[in-house]
Image (cartoon, rainbow, N blue to C red; front, side):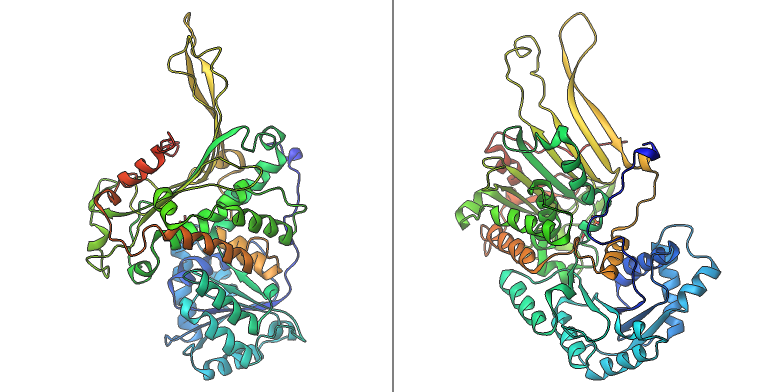
Length: 515
Ligand code: BG6
């Protein structure tokens, strides 16, 4: 794209300068800190996006010192960050701002120590502007915030500086527990201080959904039930449950992926245009959309929602075990590693359009995409002479990998006879903009530091999403898995999902393969 054609605008306030502040990471010795948070903070530092000065304080139980934690973090940034990794000089400057505070999260003493470390800082801004990041076990979220409040580290109306709390997922287990957590947190902090994460919202391609829909008249006018026949949202992974069985056995695919990532993508693809790019306008529209999702009775859920669980199979040419054989999984577990649902939005724009969502582990490929299928043209002209009948148009938003957008339309096959064939136009992020796009966590951390809540979930939004998840689950709860709900690892899911989609004459579209 020509540089001169790039128009710049700001969604929310994310581009505002960030004030000097301290970042406190609870769960400092955990996987998320190592794999995502620290690499993201380091890349923000490299890009000059962290405030000057800043401090990072990690809190966890392991017996690190400042120096031993820094060493471990360097290895983590080298391994999980973007190559080539930090130079010695860069790392020294970054590491000088990192500190460790050892303690149990349920002990008041830990928070006294933390307060002491915050007080050591060289300026009032570093002492009172604080981003607390809860990368802990979900059962500890409320407890940590209560302790912070008691210690005077967080106030809902701070007299000095600002304090914000980033809460990782899962936020609750169902609607009742999410509400209870919201209520507890609301006793100590205001809604404006809470930043509930869904890392999918930090992905460039997910942010591009709004840009694509609302800045392109050619598509904006067609984005409704008159032109669109069905939508399919697929988020598939080849990975299995790995070493997260402890968590996954309680969660399953519906809670782990559909309740959050897929419903967020759905909301962005189908919501009404917001009145502005302010956080509240966008979040208002998403909530409105989520509330329009038809609530199924358990019987309806049993027809429109399918779960599955992987059995042993082959993934990327490698034999992999069944879910029930994975370490720490119960041998008779009925936890779903796959879920597919047909949803309807009972609103003016989408009335009657089926929207299919599916996600699973140990599927054939790792890919996330949204496929919008348009209605066919009337079959009066070519149908008689072209066989097969020309295919309907489709737009595919390729969220990852090979990020981009593809448009499928029909072309005449050159020759004397009349034959149509679907052809495709591809837009490719890498080819167009170069390979660098910031990791989701970079964007989200930067926004939280700037106080921009656009890409975080509001209280009513997370509750609306849980209300949907709860009613989708009702179709199978307390029922053992049946044969048609199992799928071999490396396939595209269980036979039950094919039967479900076929009920409306549709089939799953295999995600686009772009070599
Ligand atoms: C997480 C889920 O939220 O998202 C994981 O807990 C899943 O189970 C992951 O693997 C997928 O994220 P991404 O960014 O790799 O698509």
